[in-house]
Length: 258
Image 1 (tube, rainbow, N blue to C red):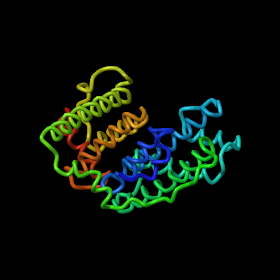
Image 2: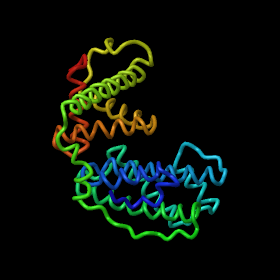
Image 3: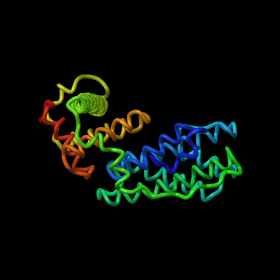
Image 4: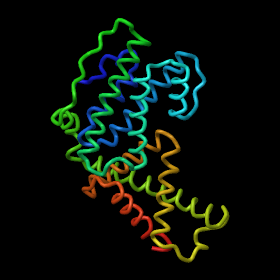
């Protein structure tokens, strides 16, 4: 199946895979596309740091700043990488538009920018005589064709999603209770010692738990995105605030205070 990132497949299969997954998820899961493109940008930066033998930090922003100060990349490319990074971060933290068509537009924009960054990187660091191919914007039919297998879940797939959902929700619950104990009991004791807690206060801890999990690394971010994808399908909503409140309500209802 066609991909704008085929040119990089042999040299860097992981970059190709991220680009491919991003362009083929744009219409049915724009959040995943935005996150994959952010990850693609980060991977390219990591490769550049290794190539230049530079000491990198855990912060993509700081790494881009170092590349800018050293004059290692064109300013236009650094601007594109920052744009991809910011949209990806907003996806992780539910800050992009709630309107699905707007999310698709943002993903399309990031996809084209990631293509520009990738071709620049390939020409500068891999093959200086590389002829940049023409970018082809993905279409809805292409996206649907790549995800036909997901339209009718088998009982196995449904059960797999259910197991993941229950497991990840239990993990979120565990983080919430840890946050509650740290803040309200100075890190000691049990939540059973707390007689009352309103849903609004509980929701604050729920939001904090999501922020904590998002900061734990790529594996956890992908878990959050997959959880949100399941909820979108089951709740028939693309509104992250609505989805979060439904999840928080579920956890609150089975808590000591619900």
